Length: 286
Image 1: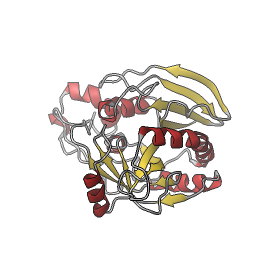
Image 2: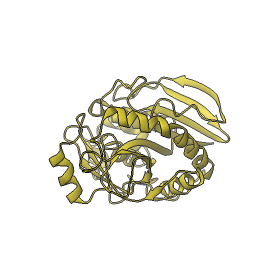
Image 3: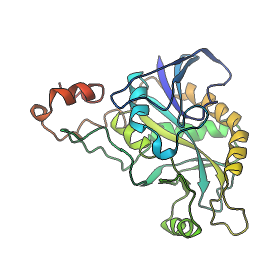
Image 4: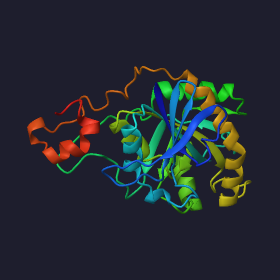
């Protein structure tokens, strides 16, 4: 059975056709994930839904236990992660309400644990192409099929620390960097998914123009919530379209990301590290 994980808002699992719905608690070496996961079946696919900020949105972006979240999905056998995110637009042509499938990330966060490695083992995975090319391509097709008003393929998502929105000076500088979107949550989520050899791509919903646009109001929580509410059903439709398109076998860069990334010799890795990371490195280090 295909296994797909969805990271996003807490209401995404309320979608047509999802059966056998229940919640489970998953323990990890890095503590608890953001919340219990909602499990269900959509046709021949097993689905796992994880509310990124916890139910009730009580966890700030910088407080999210990203390692626990990704490890929990890996532990459950997830091979594909659909990341649903609200973003600010840094380009005129990406208007609020548009859907974007970004192809690149710029990690501008400052203090988040961004790797499963360290403490006696070193690995350097490639992040040249940080999203799964297969999954992101399916996102684009599914978004169009679902009736999304405008869908943009590609672009760079700038991830800032938050929780404050950008100053006007920051926003204008970011635009000069050439980024397309701004958000607070997709890094180090994408990095950890790559280390876990899980296919990962983002389905981004533009909610505002940050604060750079001279003729639009500055970003506010009210605007974001209003746009997100309007897009919840669209997100469910896109997920419903993309899941049947996902194959049971993977033929992409993600599935063997660690194959040549671990540079620590086998004999130098302690038994404790091997136990903690066995789920990730068991294919390569015994």
